Length: 145
Ligand SMILES: CC(C)(COP(=O)(O)OP(=O)(O)OC[C@H]1O[C@@H](n2cnc3c(N)ncnc32)[C@H](O)[C@@H]1OP(=O)(O)O)[C@@H](O)C(=O)NCCC(=O)NCCS
Image 1 (cartoon, rainbow, N blue to C red):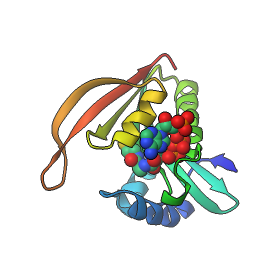
Image 2 (cartoon, rainbow, N blue to C red):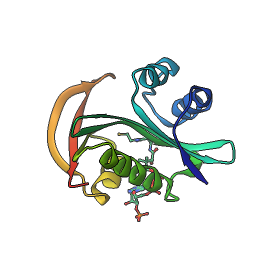
Image 3 (cartoon, rainbow, N blue to C red):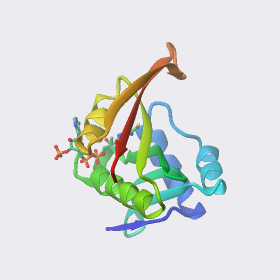
């Protein structure tokens, strides 16, 4: 098991997992643009097999978690925890003192996961997510990395 930076060569596998796992997936182009923009990334690999990944951006003292996903068949085994721990560590190394994120208010599993790591509920952003109907986002943050 290995945690690495994502490379452009990982994006096909990542996009396949994303489509299988998320109801409103990032497109392959979203991932490519994220790497092009110089955002940070982490991929959890078992040999060449990608089990999960995260994309985040660090600007000054703020880190923003943009996407964290564990492949459906591998969820609930502690892999998300490994990836998020690495995001927090890398954010700190890069100078961040706080991590922000948005999550769909219906995504109780993810909200529970973030709270376990000490993320606090900050605010609701109404109709933030596409869908029919649109869905509110819960804004969360964790200070003191
Ligand atoms: C959210 C996600 C990344 C968590 O990764 P994971 O590998 O399944 O989580 P882990 O096994 O590392 O679990 C860590 C903690 O999260 C919580 N958690 C995990 N699965 C849960 C579930 N089904 N219900 C409630 N809490 C859960 C638990 O507190 C767990 O700690 P514990 O095992 O000590 O009780 C993963 O479920 C996922 O990819 N979901 C789909 C994509 C998504 O929603 N991403 C977040 C969008 S903002």
